[in-house]
Amino acid sequence: MTAAVRGNNVSGRPWKSVQEPKRSLVKNNASKVGFKARQELLKKQNIVKQLVKEKEREKLEEKERLKKELEERKKRKLENEQKAEVVQKISAAKLKRMKKKQLRQLQKKSA
Image (cartoon, rainbow, N blue to C red; front, side, top):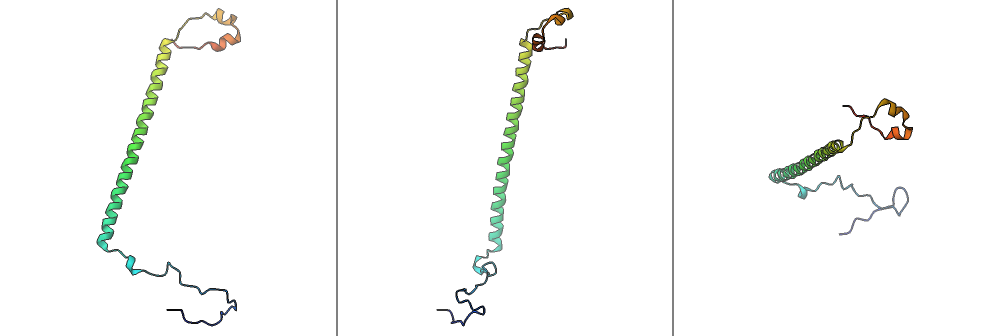
């Protein structure tokens, strides 16, 4: 069926098309879903959300575990380096004779 013939536009501009109602205002009863179907859909969505949260939690735990391992490794490495160091006692008189460059290479350790 064709649309009814319309007269001239009020504005006098014949190129202006006829406005149709907004799509958001037009209701479509066929798209409505029953209560049971909605409940099942919500259950499925909740299950998916729980799975996603579980995956994220596992990922965070793995990250924390790796971080702790890295810290322990660094700590062990530092301890091993300290054990392997050569320690010598230097007298105050010798320190006074040393040049600045040599003094910069020294490290103080507590006994």
